[in-house]
Length: 469
Ligand code: ATP
Ligand code: MG
Ligand code: MG
Ligand code: MG
View 1 (cartoon, protein in one colour):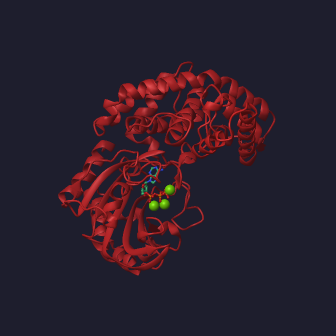
View 2 (tube, helix red, strand yellow):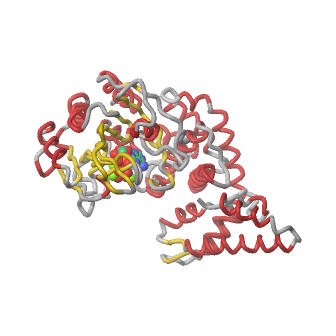
């Protein structure tokens, strides 16, 4: 069996041998884009190279980029534990051409690596193209010999990429692997495409147009290539399993979680162990890159992820904080490829332990309240003010409550939650004014509202919760 670590190495070596500069992963906190919460694709650290703002001593590159998709435009948080192929943290393998090679060579590289170097059966592969991209359609026939019915034209935004309203954009072509008809799901573009049978493994983006205010205004002088392949997905394929969580890395993390909680890792426990393994990686890598749990912004996303994992540890019956005890397994699996993880190990362990110790103080009471509020409910909606109380008094991030009720088909009244939050802010503001404070303090409240800091007002719980992002 080829290990995930060997697959990562093999990818970089292949493109290295084809003249690409091997570039280490950038940190998860974007260095060049304040609008982005976390790096969520391999191309992010190269954005300025693609737009021409920055030049590098090479025109082709390859990387394995740490990515987090747990908020904003790409939010896969709610998928974790429920699909075989989504994580909040994953590694994106990529090859990039900055005005060097274009469409044909990108397809040749992808096809050569998958079918020749790695020996995947061409019969298992399907490609999509943007519906108007005849050039890509013809290249898939010419280069790969794919029959027409396995080159699927997709008319949606899924197959058209852009950097925003301004800058490079272009069609993309996605490669799907068919795990077989024993798995539910249909080919891309079909009604059942969201199943786990046909899994998107690799996205090739052909940057060829220039956009201004969301309108294509011309061709790029130097068309470029950006590709992204999910390491965990290709590892599943190459290890002959149909589920990312059955690959070597995840099996080791899940085994550790099973051993420490003395629980079976299958059956009813499956989702909990998966959430724990996934969130352990995300928390570990975020902390290693300098993010700490907080009541707002990036730190609040981290806190939400940590607490969600901690609820699942509680479901498994863990009587003591669990997450920090899993860090050694994480370092064993991934520390060689990412030395920052080994270096930050003491900080990761201390942060997880402190957060879990703190959260466990209110978790039980919160869950009891949630149980009482939903006794006898088989579906329907939890009132927003209950969700708010859970948040405010017991430190339950909104999405944790949602996740806790999801398996029972109960929704949460988001609007009611927001109203309760707004009402509390209003009351706090009134109380503040009533205390004889000067009008200029209003400005302070505006700032607080904009930034989401609430702890100072004292109405947030002792668990230090703040704004929901
Ligand atoms: P999907 O449609 O499956 O959500 P995507 O189209 O959002 O994937 P891209 O933005 O094209 O994904 O990212 C490139 C590649 O990164 C994908 O082809 C996939 O292999 C991988 N990938 C994307 N999101 C995730 C995730 N949440 N977990 C693991 N791998 C992912
Ligand atoms: Mg997606
Ligand atoms: Mg997709
Ligand atoms: Mg895609």
